[in-house]
Length: 284
Image (cartoon, rainbow, N blue to C red; front, side, top):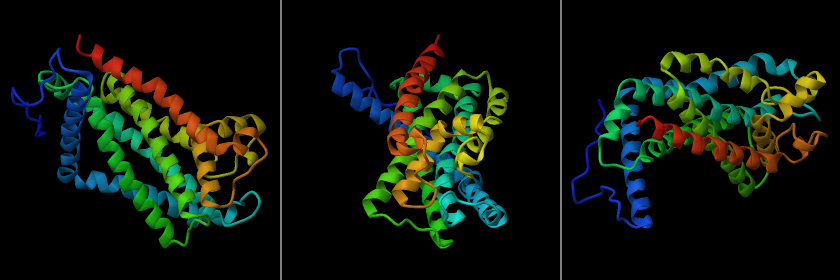
């Protein structure tokens, strides 16, 4: 293992069976932070990979906004670029899923996870640390996208509170998607399986209202796109940023902010326990 994760000293943080729940929780957080620092240290060793991950969504914005934007109409009128940017913020939250899956399964296949198990640390720290590191990465990636949008004349037209709420919904979606990535990474047989699953990321992103209005699709396909969790967050952020394209006639579009909360909560409620259980079973 090329990461600087050191066993703790006997008197510092080992979890004993007689520890109180608050003490065990504090020690689990300390362990998770150690794993987070280990994952962040990889940024300095592979800066190119990290920077490409931040810049790639910018390229997609330039392609769709510059090449295709003039041919795509926005429901209710308005500038396509302002319609596109909230969707691309949402898409950016999805793109990092592939990195999470690959990092988790690579650690498991190379024996890094086994090394973690040999240390006197909380069993939840590995997945929590991975989640925290990827959330920090997502914050930077979202900041890069928002600065890019501002440089290209995108802006929000609501108040600062509404804009902050939109950012919060984007990060809530990212938090939920992370647990899908962690679960797949733990449950997969190796990097080859993860590579096959990665193919599904793009269809999940395109089968939504991120790039075009779902109302322009065939009725059955549009219904699927409207109920895509990504569509809920994209519509909610358009509403909060007061950008064009929000407020379609369907129930899910009319309640986009509600669904942008409900979907991530449901996803987290399913995949967080699955991730924890899968990690425990890896010990067997």
